[in-house]
Each structure stands twice: as structure tokens, then as C-alpha cells.
Image (cartoon, rainbow, N blue to C red):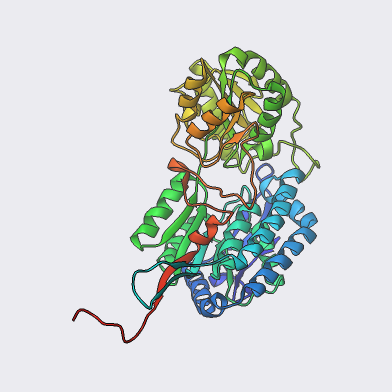
Length: 483
């Protein structure tokens, strides 16, 4: 499979025909050959978007809504193709691919409904004969940088919300999922998006930083949204700050799942298996830490380990449906093996799974994890989760917050008053009581605290992210002034 850049709705090769390859994480075979954009290509995309801003920002809400609704229909129609491409490029199971596509179709429809909700207000004023109001206007060109792990869902929100607010978008796709992201963009082109309103770029890994910096620096770009690692997010934020550009950042996570002493253990285990091992744990809101009251820890761990050992592993591109597929690359396995060796050397116990073989790894649970182990603090971002045992509820809250991250979290307990109290004290952008950490609804704001980033995708919060608020007064030209 090959992908091209798209500028002014026209597919084109990169400057000098440059390309890069996305290889299968296990076989090493070339899956996709992508166009490797240069800085000159990126600037051409920015100029195209800048030229489209005046007309797109003035386009009526019905037109924007109709395009997004049509794109949602096209997403659903292309589901079989998405499943095939995502399995080949990023090891996605049929379940994960379907979740991405159907969730994105719902997101497009929710975003379409915002077209008529971008509103201002009247403001009381003491000035006689004056009407004081606010309006919201499109901010300008938006640079959307999207990762490979939830390529459709995370891509859809990075495109639909800026677009419905009247902003042209430069879509910088992941070099690990170029064909998947190109397929997402194609839905918007086929839905009737005008030329210049969506530019599609892919870069080789070694050229990504220069292209990103050139785009952030371009005067037409007024907003940047990025989903990815905290390390790269910090670089994006620092670059944007130098150019006084506002960012929306959704970064790493180390989601805690608190199991209180009165938790429904069967329900907790069901949520634990789903939240830990969906898409091999390569989701920003995957459950990476179970903070379990020691009074129920043995029973919880025994049931959880039994379920984890039964999960089917394989390569969805070759062996059909499975739960645990290959990770994005062999480097993930090397990193996780180092974490496991460190944890076991310091007293932890592996109760399910074990070391990775390259990009292949079974569902793995590490019990008796404590501070001082690498795996206690660092994001695993793979099919590995941990158990931290605590004495009581107060220690559970302290341990849940003992992390630099604050994205998703969960609390299980039958006493809802106590569970809600715990939820209110967890430092995370979302907390699910008696539910899994992996959850998303397009009408609910989603984002993190601490080193998990700032700003919110989804819900009405995106209107503030992708518009400018302007104060306007209508006054009597004959009004008196003091001098």
C-alpha cells in the first residue's frame, strides 16, 4: 500500500519523491510506503490552509454539519477496509478497529451538532445607550498531530472539532499508521470538504521534528493539538510557547484503578481485564495500576490472573480475531522486559504472562509492586499491568495520586458515598465509579491533569479550544466623553 500527501484536495508525492516505510512489527515486511513530506511540503500545506480560512470560517453551520454527517456515514461504510488496514499497520484486533470506527462516526455526528452551538452572549453594561455582546469566531489554521494507537478515534476528534468551529486543519498523521490516517482523511474529502480546508501530511521519523516546528511557526497556524507522549508533548508546548500559539495536549497516563474492601470483585475483574488489555494496553487510558485493599487483594489477584491467562493472543492480520495482538514494534518488548526484570529483582511477582518476545507479549500482571521499581512510576504502554497493595482507603487515595500523570482512573466499591468521596480526591481528568478506566463518549469532556496535559477534547469544551472570544459593543456615536 502507498500513501500520498494531499494539498488542495489533490494527492501528490513529497518533494523529490521522498518516501518512508512502515514495517510489520513482527515479520518486518513493508506494510505501507508513505510520502515523506519536507519542510517545503509542510509550508505548502500551511499556505493552502491559510487561503481557505476566509471562506471556510464564513461557511454556514448547515454546510459544516452536512459534511460531517456524510463523513460519519462514509466511516461506517469503510469499516471492512479500516479493519484490514489497522490490523496490518498497527496490530489492531477487529474489536479495536470496530471500536475506533464506530466511535468516530458517533463523534462526527456529535461534532456536527455543535455547528449551531457556537454562540456568544449579551453582557450587562452601565454605559447608557450601549449594547455589549460577545461572539465566537474561528481561531485560524489548526495543526492536528495524531498518534497511531487509536488512529481513527483520536484522529476524528482532532479533525472534526476544529472543522466544525470554522478552522482549516493540517492533519499530520503518524508515520506508524499512514494508510489508516489517509483512509480517515478520505472520508472528509469524499464528504465534500472544500479544497484547502484539510491538508494531509506524513513524514519520515527523521524529518518529523523539522516539519512540526515549521508548521507551528507559520503565522497562519493559531492552534495546535497533539496526542502522544509526555516527552514529545513538552517539546510541542515549548515550541508553541515561543510562537505564542495555544495548545491542546493529551499526553501519557498511568491510570489507577482503586479496589476498595467492599468492591464487587467479579465486576472489578471484568473491568480490569478490559481496561488493562484492550489493544495490548497501548491506550493512554489503559489501567496500569491496580491499587487494591489488602483485605481483598488475594481474591482479586487470583481471579484477575485466571482471566488474563485465558486471553487469546495472535496477529490479527494473519490469524483472525484475537484479544492480544503484537505491540507497535520490538522496541516495546525490550523496554517492558527491562521493567519486568527490575521489578522482580526488587521483590515483585509475575502472576500472569511474562517476558516479551520482540513485539509479542502475553497479558502480564505484576503483583506486589512498590515505589522504587521502574514499573511503579513509568508508563508501560503494553499488555502489562501492576498490583499495588494498600492498608486502607486513605492509603489507596495517596497511592492513586502518587504519579506524575492524571488522565483516567476508576474506583470500585459498594458504598457509593465512600466511592464518590475517593473519586473526588483522585487527581485525574476523569474517574469512573464501578467502571473501567477505558471509556469515551463524544459528548463528555476528555483530557488530563498534571503531566497528562491540558485542555479538553469532546463535549462543548472544544468550542473554547478552537474559537476566539471577541467582545463587541454597539454605542451611540454622539455619546459624551470627559475630554
